[in-house]
Image (cartoon, rainbow, N blue to C red; front, side):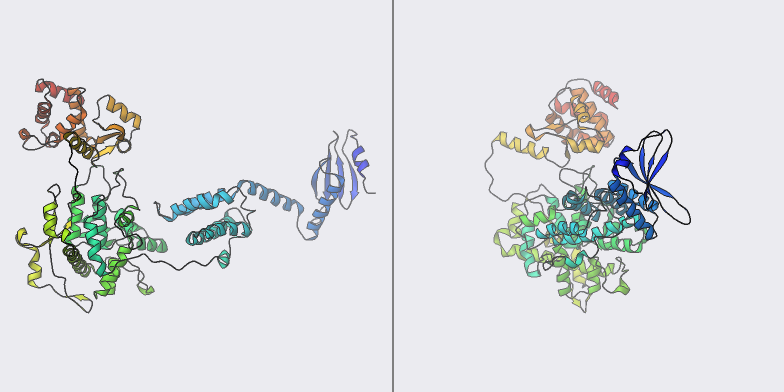
Length: 624
């Protein structure tokens, strides 16, 4: 007879276990202590196992019968209710611990094993886009509960703001992430499949703007008189003279340049096309030849000047303005082009298109141009293309291109009387070395090949410098605007500011980072007169980078010990300025040459500090 609610409620403990049957396998088990549990017994593989459906009164008689019917339906379908329950519990645990964000972190770490790091790398884009667009909406949800509609809503929001490329990347990453989840956390289906079918159409691709040959004279004149940082101007000139990518230029370090052979040897891990080849073929960077960039004379001159101005803390050819161990920002070159008036007309990458278009129009062999720009060959048979090909042919081609650029620049200068070379020579100061190259007639081209240079042209780089017609590719710039009349105090202040902002004087945080100390430790060293620093009002403090050199640092510390609280600006000048008694060397240069005693004596003499030289050397020995 089926149970009733009253019978279940009034069932009392008797001191031993007993069972009240309801029907179709359901029974109420009453324990000796009075605990009541619902049991369901069923037939499976010739046996009569049972499964608990919960306790009374938490599960009522009506609810117990519903659970029994669900279990009977599973048995009828050939599903063991016990195994089904374990799977449901496991899924619930997985749903609680495997949120979208948790699975994303796991997938992201897995992707990081095969992706290159960097500010504009795929990995950095994944981090940035997921943090901004995807995790806020999907992060807390269980990976098992996210539907295709949830993903589509997020993608539509990205598309509505016009970021179609970002939406396309997100669809690809969604598909990869959910396929990963199907294996790692046993997700049953991929809600990201087929999202591309409903993608909003992308607008027409806008290629990077570039310049034609007839536009180069005006551009080169503006570049010559660019008013920003000299390194930025030289970086743009190197792009024009070599055709490398901006990323390859930003990653360039001094060790990549073989100036004796006029070669720039770019390692494969720094070249976009070679990175893709390494990933596809699963090769190490040592198995793929580097990208060889022949340097024309003008480019060699620029690299030599950049290396000459290199500071001890500098790692890259083009350093960051405030962090000498870092490279220039990815936006620096494009921002300079915008300031020159070329917004929407030219970009750093567009310089490559400028070179490609010009060289092809000049009749150079397509393979030479493609090799110079490190483009992958569209012919699949030649897809494993060697970037060391055609080096000598490209050397002649790029020297001709550099000479043509010089002619374009001269043409632009002559078109504006105010910018004529004679005028510039009068206005230019002697505060910076000038590197000049001869004007050489462009080499004739026939059937995509450069003909041999005539004897006259070959000899153009020889002879006395005064007989050449120089086109200056490294510019020593001075402000051409009318300058106000300054008082003596203003001039002194301007000189101090120029010294203070010299790249050799590092901001305190940058110096602390280089020596591996905290800012507080560096401040304590300054206060204890163990480091020389320059202070300038609210501009903070800067520390001369020569103190990264142990010999010069010890000497500076010894001078600080000897002179006490003397003004740091006076001491800075005494250490840096040439002294006649040292043969025209500064004390810091004399110390490196081994003349520590003479250098100390010269510094004390310049500062007017009284005392025996022996006392100064005692201070030096105490520090060293």
